[in-house]
Image (cartoon, rainbow, N blue to C red; front, side, top):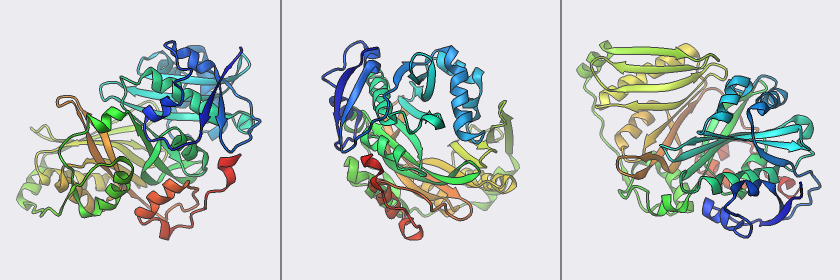
Length: 418
């Protein structure tokens, strides 16, 4: 296949609009043509690596994709669906996913990328960008990343408005690639994952359609507790969010109500075929609930959702959560809490969960047609994994979160120039 060449220059990118503007000279109505371009990167790099062919995955590619994850992670990848042929094949067929493969020649699949498309929430999650070990120094993964995201973001520009990914901190590459494409660090997940039986920390990186921040962000000023202010200042510096209300709510809990709620607590645990648990706490004769996903492979809890009517209910749910965490020896927990509910923020903070990122426009409110800011509160157990590598803006985030003084952070090397 003869590949057309397009040029990308290294410059600061904040939104997908900034990113796509670099490609306006060759982006056509036929989005699949984007995948056939060989991108010329005008940066301080001299890469002789091979530019892979980027293709939309077909069901027949499912086996090769699962083999890539097994080849790279030796069975330690925490999201087991990517090691299951049937699950991957279902993703490829389903309209809520885009799965891309990278090939050398016609038949040699050397890498892949998966995107979850949550159309109702108008959000997209990028994950599983990985290459077989023996090709990681041969294939130009930066070109593969840029070419893939150009296709994805052009295709879904008017359907998906917020894009995010979680990246490991064992290498500069994921952070650098993301930042170059506008996926900038916004929150820190200390000790969240385990790869190769070693604890690792992650960063949440994010980018937006311009209209989200300019037109569809909730107009009401955020109401945050003082402990969230540093996170807010970091995000405000990039996105010009305005001035929040800083509050210190006085929380007085009624012990009689707490005791009554405790008697009505129900717990349901459902397991999928990989052993991942969906845990739901509820209250009899109430619509209130507290729901999360427990991953026993890495002893973590994430994707937490809740609905409550009173502070006492949230307090009891969190006490139930902490009991579950002790029982399961949980290492890591995270929950995204509304930036407009300072009472909730304080209850989480008082319970020992720390704010480690302010995320503008994270969740879409369909009834009111706007996006709402959230704060990630998380917890990690044990000594902090300080053998991490950070690009400057990631380092700035950790410094603001007061991790910098506690860690021996490796300074960015010349990786970005290779």
